[in-house]
Image 1 (cartoon, rainbow, N blue to C red):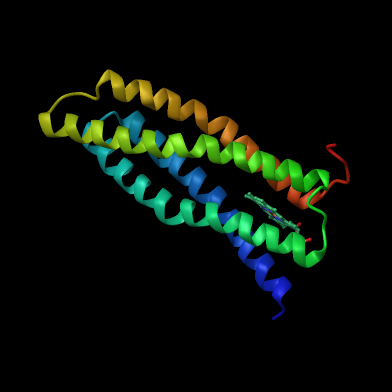
Image 2 (cartoon, helix red, strand yellow; image 1 turned 180 degrees about the vertical axis):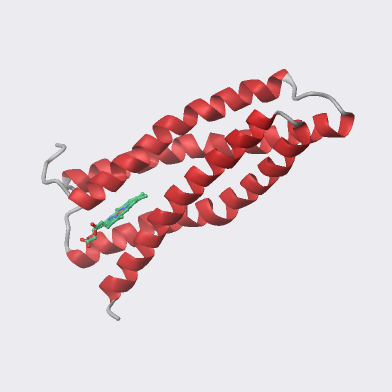
Amino acid sequence: MDIYFVLKFLHVIGAVVLLGTGAGIAFFLLLAHRDGKPLVVAGVARIVVIADLVFTATAVVAQPLTGLALVWHVGYSLSEGWVLLSIFLYLITGALWLPVVWMQIRMRDLARAAADKGLPLPDAYHHLFRLWFISGFPAFAAVLAIMWLMIQRPSFALF
Ligand code: HEM
């Protein structure tokens, strides 16, 4: 096993974890929300927060490390358009993901409090859910665009 294979294997696993966890979290929280029961939302949001911290956070840190190691190992230039654009899109995804983590923690706490008091999900929860839902689209689109750039590696210059 050479270093190239190890780096690429880890990088592709990271991509799978990012996409898979993102899609899975969106699916489970959306379905729990549609169920509408505070106890269900609180339970699913609790697991979603753990999944994001264990899987997504690990991949978020590892992905640029293995990516940059591949750039160096294969001999690409950091000024190549597809590399630069991927890094830019990755930063945008991160900027969207961090508030999403906070929203999930808040939604979990609000749902838990409502469940404990036997109340319906409060307005603050519904407001956060809408923001969470809307943030998911550009973040997911950016990750799909990165996937395309990584696989196609089109030759173009940004500057
Ligand atoms: C954040 C900065 C990133 C850098 C610097 C980077 C860098 C690279 C490099 C240099 C390669 C080519 C390796 C080769 O020539 O064999 C590559 C491949 C790949 N990258 Fe990234 N990457 C980054 C982020 C991502 C992200 C966020 C994803 C997906 C979520 C991703 C998915 C992939 C995949 C699937 C491949 C394999 C493509 C193929 O062999 O057809 N990368 N990456």
